[in-house]
Image (cartoon, rainbow, N blue to C red):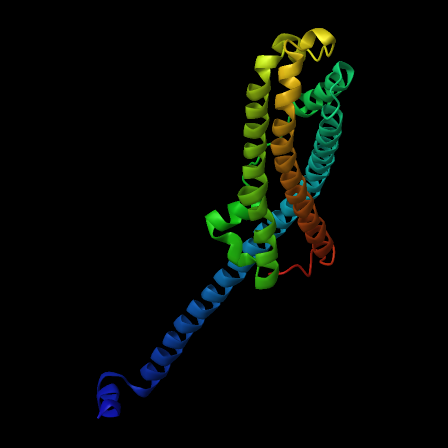
Length: 241
């Protein structure tokens, strides 16, 4: 029936031309779609390479920062342990030396920022799907999440702990001299009171310092392992490329 209708409306020659024209239209659509997909793939590959280079630079910089943080945290632990040992001797000279160790820890400070990482940008824009290797994507996410979920809170807690310890011991100190790091006998406004109060304050601060040093060391290991994994890929064989 359909053949008869077609023949009624089209002559054989017209029918062939009609089929050819329809076929050409379909072929043109397929070609255009293929070109569009190729261009999309090319743009995604370009974005991935840019992300990749940014991630490599961030990992390298984070290792440098974490190495400095670990070094400072370990110094904090050593200073506090030395301060606790010196505070055990009921002698003004030992107490002054103990205060010197405390001042080194409290006045050293920690200076670092936590800007959004390239990985977090990829997640927020949806471009994280460009990394096809799910295992590597999880490794990348774990490392950068560790900074936000562990290292950053540790820094906040450490700042709070040092401030609290300073407030607890300041009634026994000449604060202006201490802040100027002028550690002389005159800095101890109440030698006996400081000697009695410092042991407990040091112990609490030492616990926080040990936790921070441990977490920083773990973070450094995370990023060193990540850098090693990154080094196994070339620009042409990255996960997702």
